[in-house]
Amino acid sequence: MKKPLVEIKDLKKIYHTPKNETVAVEGFSLRIDEGDFISLVGPSGCGKSTVLSVLAGLTELSDGEISYHEDISVGYMLQHDCLFEWMTILDNVLLGLKIKGALNYDSENYAKDLLKTYGLGDFTSSYPHELSGGMRQRAALIRTLAIKPKLLLLDEPFSALDSQMRITVSEDIGRIIKNQGLTAILITHDLSEAICLSDKIAVLSPRPARVMNVYDIDLPDDLSTAKKRTSAKFGEYYNILSKELYG
Ligand code: ADP
Image (cartoon, rainbow, N blue to C red):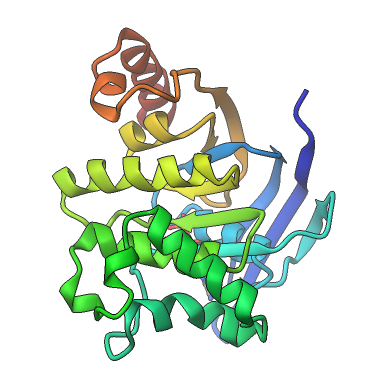
């Protein structure tokens, strides 16, 4: 039995602007268990990023409740890797720790170990433009991992990559996240990506976002993305989910 990490109950978010107000999220409830990899899929503009932003504490909720079952740190990864071009990969990776005031001998060594473990040990003194798109995304993930988050929020982190690269990089990042034993919530437009990476997929309604259904995804973790994509189960999940999303 998995342990609940975060419970979102009846979340509501209204944005107020001088001209109007937008109800972005309403009646949104979801339980996230420890170790879950959950994808949120839903129509564009339905409120997905708003949910992550509220979870990250960057946006205030208008109503509802978010209960964290323990005191956890949250890591946030966005569409663009947000690496600073004038800083080396190591300095970029240490930036989050510096901002948190948590940079010390141990945390720096931990970050360096992560770079080594995930194949960037020889690139610590390189600059971002010297790395491939996939390596940059890995460096961005390591910068997030360096602060030892328990919950990782991923807002379309692969959408700036071309389709072939997207498959390789998402597989790579997914493997690192599983390896680190993290809990993750991913926003993606790509149903195939969601099926290959997730344990669960929450299908959201058009705006205001609420969870219409949560599907358990049961594909073996040790299978490559290519093998997952050609399996019969993948096809079944894809059909069910696309029917729910696109009718
Ligand atoms: P998604 O991630 O599903 O594309 P968002 O959460 O970004 O959707 O946006 C949901 C709705 O809230 C959209 O109509 C968007 O225009 C609106 N919205 C998002 N952020 C703001 C903001 N800061 N101020 C006003 N409206 C916003």
